[in-house]
Amino acid sequence: MQEWQRLDELVRSETPQLLDAIRKATAQAHNEAELRFALQSLLMDFAQKAGISLTQEHERLIGKGRADTLYNRLIVEWESPRSLRQPARRQHALNQLHALAQETARQNRLRRVGCVAFDGETFLFARYWDDEWHTEDPVPLSGWSLRRFLKMLIALETGRALIAENLFADFALGGEGTDKLPQRVTQTLYTAIRSALKEGNHLAIRLFEQWEQQFSQATGYRQKAEQLVKSDEFHRLADGMGIGLKEAETHLSQVLFCLQTYYALLVNCWRG
Image (cartoon, rainbow, N blue to C red):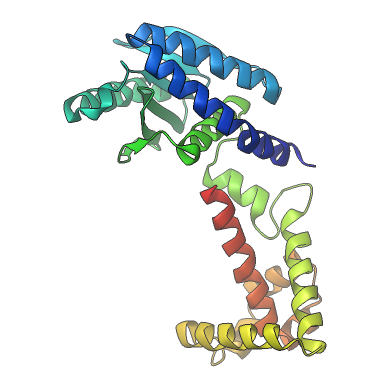
């Protein structure tokens, strides 16, 4: 099992218990300090189980502001219990995070800084990305939002951020990933669809024919097939999938089906 798979499984298995503990801590906390202490303790326990060493700095002075907690490239502002129900408090928290993220990026020459505000009940996710500030609507504490927070914590702490460059290296066909995951997955998909069609699997045939009709209508690839198979992009695609060029040309529709299926699986995995 790869390290990212181990951590993903750990996040999923620990989320229910951690979710209950956070709700209990929020109900018992009377102020921000009490909530912060309880949540930081829970995160340290999670980090120990994950086998990562959290680089946490509390009350870190950044420019003219002060970050509640800085985890490497993730800034966390702890808010008073349930205070983010108020729009004014949410805006204040986002303004603080924006200023802190901008200064952190400047001081450390970072392209990306993750930001989270949390009051035990509501998450505010934001990020400072290539000198641009991106915010999202508030989301309630749930299994999904907690998993997202934990994954951000792990990614930004361990240095493997979910940015385009890293995603391309790890998951693009022909990327720099050492385990050749994209090639292995697409080869498996290709072998499976070829076998199913050859064996006359009626369900597989109907599903594939429906996909091919819809894909052709959306892209018009059949009319461009001759031009497509001669392109450098297609040659790189076949090489990345570990399929001979002649075979890829002969079974073009199956190759494109595997490619689209692979990226559809990735998108669903990232939704977490």
